[in-house]
Each structure stands twice: as structure tokens, then as C-alpha cells.
Image (cartoon, rainbow, N blue to C red; front, top):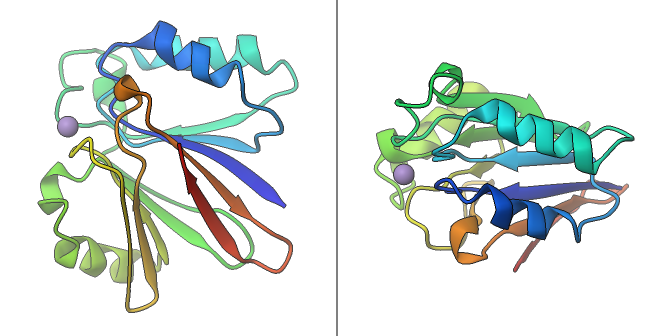
Length: 161
Ligand SMILES: [Mn+2]
């Protein structure tokens, strides 16, 4: 089984992110959909401190990240394999007019992704269209995040908090 912590829209609330990450166990990865509004190395430093055994991190830049030198260097879209069968497209979403999913679904098709995670709206979202699962964890600055698990049979489960 694989377990991912998914959040977005930190907007500078690093201490708050820390308080939520402190309660997490058994994570295989941390996925952040942009609008950090803080230097991205502060997040990687935090994760290395909290998870000495290691935990991979993937994050993208949002529309509010252009003024933090390290965050502005993050890509705006990332695609990677979550498991043998599932591929993720991670993006903040402002360039795809979220919560609309039509433009996102074109991008997902182009990249071969069957799971799309975005943020920006600060509203939790889950929908499924043409075999693509769209998820928005909401804003962690408001205490919202999600836990994404993929079991050994490749079934995806998304639990909103
Ligand atoms: Mn945004």
C-alpha cells in the first residue's frame, strides 16, 4: 500500500503545516499543489526534520509563488507515477481555470495521467470524468488536506480532512 499526504495553498502558514504533519505516520510521499507563499526549502527542511527515515516531496508553484526565489523555481506542472498503474498530474490550476476540469482533462490526456491534483480555489473537490480522477484537497491554511492511498490491487482512496 502507498500513502500520500496531499495539500495545497499553505500561504505562508509553515507552523500550521508542521502541526498537521506531526500527526501523520507511514507516509510514502507529500504532494503540495502550490501557493506556498514561503521558500520551498523551508518545507523540505521541515520534512527532513519530521521524517528522519525519509519521505519524498513533490510540489509545484502557484500564482502566489513568483516572489519567493526558491518557490518561483518550482515547475508549474509535474507528472509522475504514483504506483505501477496510476500517473499523477500535479498543478496549482490557475492556468487551467479550475474548478473547471475541461482544460485539465486535455492536459491529463496529453501527459497520460489518470489522477489530477490541483488547488487554488481553497475548496475541496472530487470528481471523475472519462476515467480521470480530479482532486483538490482544499487549503491547508484552513486546516483542509487529504490522504490518498493506493492499495496493493491499485485501488485509489481519497479521504478528505
Ligand atoms: Mn492560488
